[in-house]
Length: 92
Image (tube, rainbow, N blue to C red; front, top):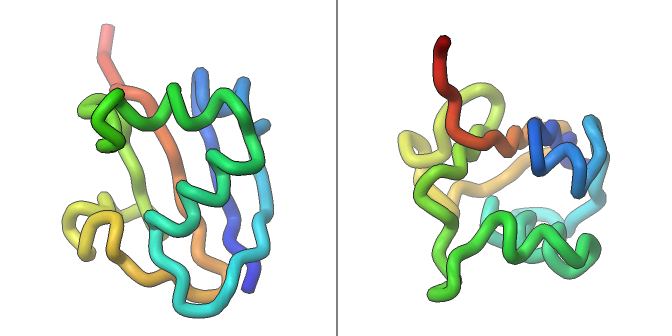
């Protein structure tokens, strides 16, 4: 199945603005992140801390909903889903 990935700020520098990635059916957000890290060398250190946890400041969204509200990294993905990866947002 194809998942659309939107990356912002430093994540855009690593992945590009819009990316389509083919992953296996019933994959989770964690599976998607693992796949991105395997194919983009700098992604792992940008996304995960030394303990292997997603960095506190990283915002992950599935179809414009924060993944924490829909099952976290275990949230299942479906054909055509959009996953956004954002740094913290600050106003000014």
